[in-house]
Structure formats: structure tokens, C-alpha cells
Image (cartoon, rainbow, N blue to C red):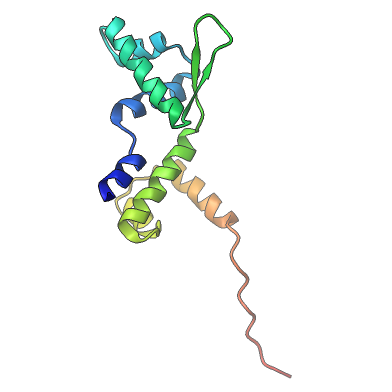
Length: 139
């Protein structure tokens, strides 16, 4: 059953490819997604895209706009929110939920650009820390 739990957390590559297209391009038709995914996009590829979109809809990661003749699909989750969920699942699996080992690895292996480092510093500086009790002499 452990593998069943793990497989629910992981998103197959093809489904992730659809999400990436929607994140980058915004709302799109199944045909538009198919053309972005496959160099030779035919009816069988469009059928495959429809299957992927149905699965993503069931997972509540994609929304369908049925108002027009041709349905439009859009991502229901942002790239950042999705990445956060995946990162938390990885941290839970590898380090009992602690993100610190993952972040330390990324920092030590210089996986951040200067701009990203500046953004991280800004975020950390604004992170509310619990106040330390003042240590002083009693009078």
C-alpha cells in the first residue's frame, strides 16, 4: 500500500507537461495543448490530451470553461503552489517533513541565481521569529 500512497502524490510526466503548458501559455484548447506537446499532432494525440485533461480535472488541477463552442482549459493551481506541495511531500518522505536539508543542499550546490538569493534574503528577513526572552539582571 505504500506504493499506492506514493503514486497518488506523484504526477505523471505527461500530466505535468500539460500543466506546464497551461502555466506558460495560459488557458488553451485541447488542440492547442496537443500542438504544444506533439510535433505531429493528429487526432490520436488530441484524444490522449483529452484523457490527460480529464485526469487533471478529477485531481482538481485543471478547470474547464464550457461557455464557448470549444472548451478552454486552465490551471487551477499555480506553479508555486504545486511546487510547494511537491516539495513538502518530498521533505516528508526524505526528512520527516523538514525542508532544511533540501534547502541546505540547494544552497551548498549553488542552485540559486543572485536574484533568487536576494528574494530569499528578503523573505527570510520578513519572516516573523518568536521574540527571545530578554536576559537581564533582576533589581
